[in-house]
Image (cartoon, rainbow, N blue to C red):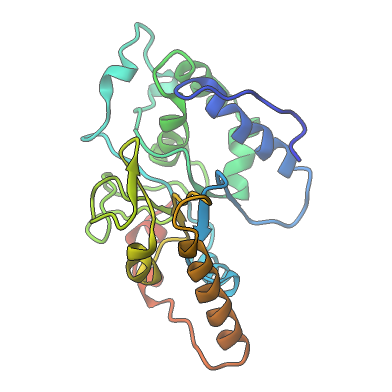
Length: 245
């Protein structure tokens, strides 16, 4: 349980503050290596064993969405410029961050100054983490030094979460422009390389989650019994885990 509970209103700083509260709380716990934030409407795509192997390949690299070309730049139209010559970047609030990056977010003055700036902008949660990950001149551990523009399989894939914003056929239904996965999505979900799939509704096509649960169970069992070997070559080939601070 987080040390502080915050009432959340979409599009405001209240979306970001709970993430920062949890980060601060987690820093009091030793040994963990990665922070992955979830909403409660996801389901894992790899097994726990597979995710650990993936993060070992990441070896301190962060994973976060980032774009300037597709950014809603009107959100940043305020009189005050971003601090420290930072270039704002749009992305998802959902991230996979190494511990040293989290320490920077919580303790560094530059991060605090950026937080004050995004608080004056629109949808700050979609700017804060993405901007810190994609401004390598700040020298934050694990941040990306390469060319921007998240695009699955082409430039810089975003693997923390698989979300279908009308990019693929939706086998379930759309709610606020995002696909709520259904039974017809199962074949695609079983093949995705991301860490988690978002979104599921527990009261909609409930067999979807039951089937996903069975899939993870079967793979976990087969890996434990050495019937199934997990291949990390795809993750080893990713440019954004090699081109980092």
